[in-house]
Amino acid sequence: MKDVVEKLGYEVELRVEGKAKFYVPKLPSEKGYAPTSLPVFFNPVSKPNRDMAILFAKTFFRDKRIKICEPLAGTGVRSIRLVLETDVVDEVVANDISKRAYELMKLNIELNNVGEYVKPMNLDANELLSMCGRGRPRYSYVDIDPAGSPAKFMENGFRGCDRGGALSATATDMSALTGAKPTSCLRKYDVIVSRTPFSKEVALRILAGFMVRTAARLGLAAKPILSFQKDHYVKVFTVVDRGITKAKEMLKMIGWISYCHKCMRIHAARRDEKPVMKCIECGGELSYIGPLWIGGLSDKDLIEKMYREALEDQELYRDVLKLLQSLRAENSEIIGYYPVNYVAEILKQSPVKPRRMIEELKAMGYRATVTHIDPSGFKTDAPPSIIVKLFKELKLKS
Ligand SMILES: C[S@@+](CC[C@H](N)C(=O)[O-])C[C@H]1O[C@@H](n2cnc3c(N)ncnc32)[C@H](O)[C@@H]1O
Ligand SMILES: [Zn+2]
Image (cartoon, rainbow, N blue to C red; front, side):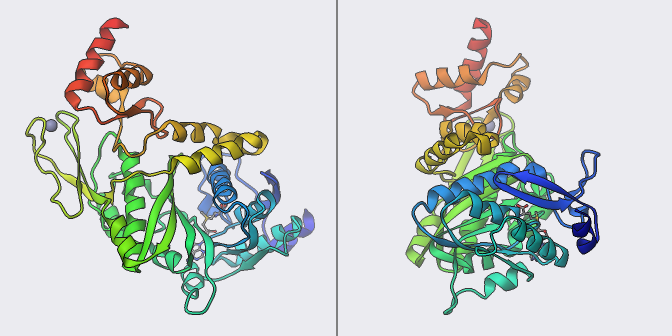
């Protein structure tokens, strides 16, 4: 350890995550420190994010050997784990603009004996990704994982991604995406946003929509196939195809959401329609959110396969089993959700169990499911009048 500290010039600690062992800067003992303040970025809380990327690569690229690019790699742990925990990696480029990150990655690659597969690089992510294409190879999987917004890397991310490949992006700028800082959202994503009871899902839909719109500008069709919100971030995986017709097809599911704070009605409209400005339920005036993705956020079959992979190695993927279970049960085509406490507050009564609401709504023929974002929430396409009626009835029964 002493020689490592001397070489790097800062205190380190050895960690184990998945099948990788690796050095990270010594983490402060107090909670709530900013990982960006470390000599090299590392956030142990993001393990589930890495787990999901690994399970995705394992499942989506099964029986293939692919080139992967992690343009913002930090300690390199994600890239190293991709090699150690999947059979799909031919080569993974682990890049970081920070010289310190680059030096640490080299050590970690050596420590895990994966030098044959992991290529460390020390470039600006945009420089690296924009070099792809026009005769130069692209990557089958690009995983954009910045601290903050991925917006400025998105266009080059798609340039660097193979047709038939996948691009995933994490965003941690939740205050912009959930409507706490609307001007920041407008600047970075060109999206008008305001608060709703389901703002975290709005955040996911804004990121998914931004990816679809960015790809379309380049004549590419990006289809969201796996999306989730966890802890301090949202993450969306898209599969990338070539063709203007296909890109236009994807744009059909870009649109607007208008939420009525008076009666709880959620409205959606497509991009080529006008956003709904007057509530169809109560006539109240509405403001709209968008443009964002109004289609399904995840592919059921992919989630099922990832869940099975995770079950096979529960020791490694225990942290994401619950998340995958909720994603399996969720119908991501239904827009928004209602936290029971929110409904209870509006109706001035005590909350009802979300599971009971879902059962009853289904029995009445409406679509209704859980949401992975909030265990106290339920998703449904039932109108608010039905939700209110049921909520009151169930309260009387309990
Ligand atoms: C959130 S961390 C990456 C964490 C890593 N992906 C993981 O799973 O542990 C973001 C990293 O991006 C790097 N970075 C910031 N701007 C960059 C740029 N323009 N090009 C390349 N890397 C950049 C930072 O040095 C930092 O290490
Ligand atoms: Zn209304």
